[in-house]
Length: 128
Image 1 (cartoon, rainbow, N blue to C red):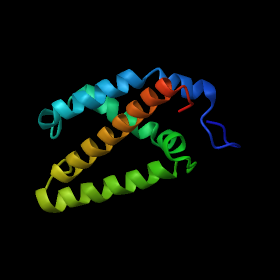
Image 2 (image 1 turned 60 degrees about the horizontal axis):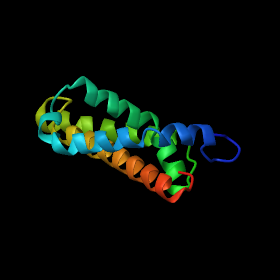
Image 3 (image 1 turned 135 degrees about the horizontal axis):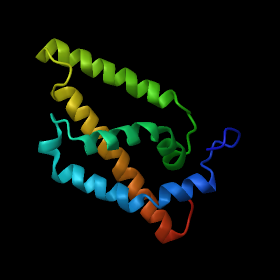
């Protein structure tokens, strides 16, 4: 992403577009296995969560034409802290249903949005 224009560079957009089938696969995998994933420690699941968190700002640049930089990650981190506090108060453990479902839903939103967006971009021959 270039700092001056606020748009994803062609090189970065091309790299992300090539990952569209993988994003859609991960989205479908998440939906089909949601009961196993929420409340578990599947390593592949956490790789996807990390990927979604890292590229969250690119999602908003590509999808919504908003360049908010890394402030989105700070907002998400604040939300995660609020969910952890809710879990600690309600369940006595940091990993409870509110945080598990919050992570699951946000990860699914990310991969569903990115996957569909880049498949449509490839079909319609438009960037991102």
